[in-house]
Length: 259
Length: 355
Image 1 (cartoon, rainbow over the protein chains, first blue to last red):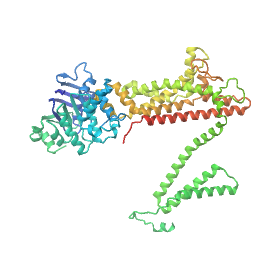
Image 2 (cartoon, chains in turn yellow, purple):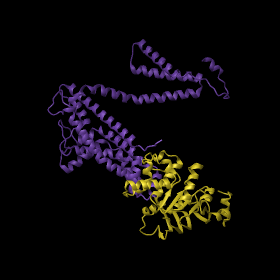
Image 3 (cartoon, each protein chain N blue to C red):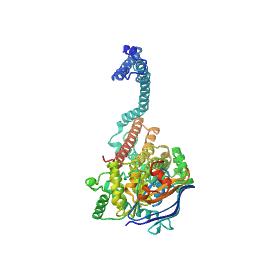
Image 4 (cartoon, chains in turn red, orange):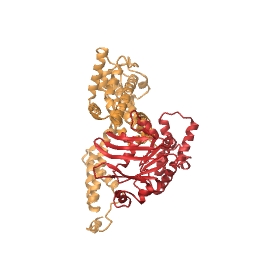
């Protein structure tokens, strides 16, 4: 498990509007990469191109290449559904399936892909996934209760358990803590640290302390001007970005001079 | 109370204002009713509607005036609005109550075992029943539902999940047009269709069902479309992000989430067409005997049974009219049972909150 992501000359468009311009970066396996930057600078849009989720929006397309251990996600004949089975995603707002129990939510990815599974095996997967998301002890006595009855932080960890149950190579997180309180945020951050041992993690966050706490590598995105496409300004080790950034814009953003 | 008028401060500095006690509404209403009653009794012209009307008008005037004097103009306006809204509600409810009371009151005379075990075959005058009409209604509406629900459901799924551009827009447009089709036109369409295929004079339960589905499909499409639209996009995205293909996302995530509403929508669509008379009169025709084959021969239905019993009265006329009322009562009960069933199913399938 866990693969390297290499992005080359990537432009993202919504119809005729260029949203993100000329991104190049590499994400090593078993690391956490944080994307920071002001709102609307294309962090989330770019994140969604890493598992072709942007295609859900009509008219969206990309130029350039995204390689997952050398395989181009945008190569001819690539099935976006297969891409997403390798590159999982956790969203800003916790979104457990309301018609399903906690257990069904975790196993949804496997079950909905019509994979037959013995009861013993699915129980095992359920437990390992929930333990992987640090949720097992809290929900083990009410696995058949609806997922929407959990607290926001628990729901978000349920969504992470759901994402890791399909055993992806990479996990993308789009501001996973922005709807959560500090304690739940801490739980998720601890979890990210553990997930790093098995997966490549990419996280978009508005919280710079969070980026500093959880990530090994930080990428700063910014808009050249209003209405212009977002760009990757600088990428480097988190330590370097936060202590000694090369670009002036990065320093201004990190020190709070703008944004 | 008059003292509080004098002491009510002009400035808005205080937080308290005069307030009428809670029982004011009840007492005032009773007083107005009694006043109106005694007024008409004095002239010897008693009548339920005029007494109620005058009482309500009197109540509006008195309560607003009293409230303006004691509580101030904002509260008085509030009382006026409350009274108007409540009476509008009562007015809207009145026809329904009147309808239920008269249908139950008159229909219950022939609402007996014979009514549900006999058809009208060889029955002249008293006796007889509507078994042929009840089974006919169940056949015709059942087949209409079987035709309309899959078509309507799939059309709505296309419109919400796949439809883009000109095709989707024109489908939406024609669905809107179809909702406005007069039912008699639907009947003529089905009749003409079956005449072309099976020759002139063809009447069958199937033709009736086709006529009803022409009316039912747009209702189903519309309600399912609205319900699918309110399923949050986040759920679709969550499913896609797990690597679930689109068709499985729709069948396993979107439809179950909207299921409760879809069931209600379908039930309402059935209730909408089950009472249709004109198209069935043309397409399914009428008969006195039980016909359990929707493919051949005319098939009686409850609305047509009610209509025929009333227009084509025999001797004694009362027997026919009583049967018509009993038929109407049966129809109302079927619609009510369908609605209740819809609600039960909706409650059963509704997403659980689990707190």
